[in-house]
Image 1: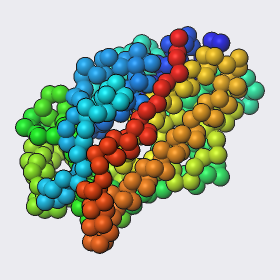
Image 2: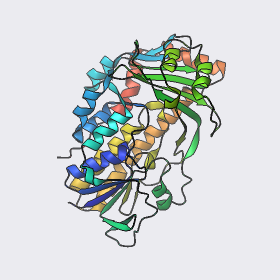
Image 3: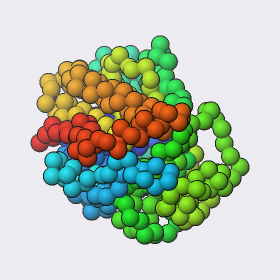
Image 4: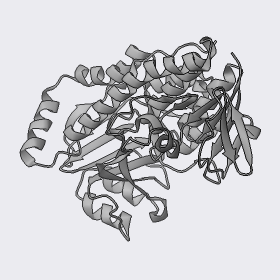
Length: 385
């Protein structure tokens, strides 16, 4: 089955969906409302399921060569004590790959490089869809209308298309936390490839990159919409007494590079990821909190599963029914687990609750942490042929 598809949204999930559909012989166009395709953002960790999806799309080797494996690190207290250690070698033995860290900008560029330039259209807003015909969807792009056999709504947590397709759904809600992040301006000597530190109502973490620089993030329990005139100065005051390398990471950052976003999620699960010939994908379908590092990985799983279903099913309708049946239960379960992980991590603020959590983590065997990661990362992609 061949056809034409329009992917609305040029983020990780949208680009991956376009690559997958092109690999099975479809004509694909990606439309993105930003003037330039997203190179914003800081860093990302990719677990085995995300890497396996990238392998199925033909870009896994390029991503691995640009990324840094995460073998060492773990979770700490603000004073530097260890709550849990990362065993990247055990994960590699179990899954065939360690977790890797990569800049989002690099990942975006590698995904774009797998697509011909002429299929990417930037600075385009899709205000609505014409679904009046049973076998086609009209996508208005400027003064033209693109006719498609399939539309992929990959337009993010605030998806306009989701709101049009499911007007009764309440949409994304504020998850109670806000995140500031940046990539350091220079390389640092870091003892861990990946670390998280949990304090009461606050988390600080870093991902080391192949070039020696690092992404750091600070998650704070705060009211939605709160912003700071001097974000970096606020963070230095808030985290100045935490263990090394937290102050060093902040000192290696330019103020202009700090990004600040409130965290939103789809706390009310969608009843379907499909409406007619439109498939929702990534954050548009299942925006989740970042506590498991699975948001992008789940979008990559979506992309491969959608392409495989379209390649093997006799019709678009049956392909989308299969996509929904395979992706919705898994991704929504991961979203629930991420929400629960946040409640047991940075969201805890009462001293007694924090102490009990820390004691439980210290007493847990290291293999328990490995099993927790395997629960979500051990996924095998369908073949795209």
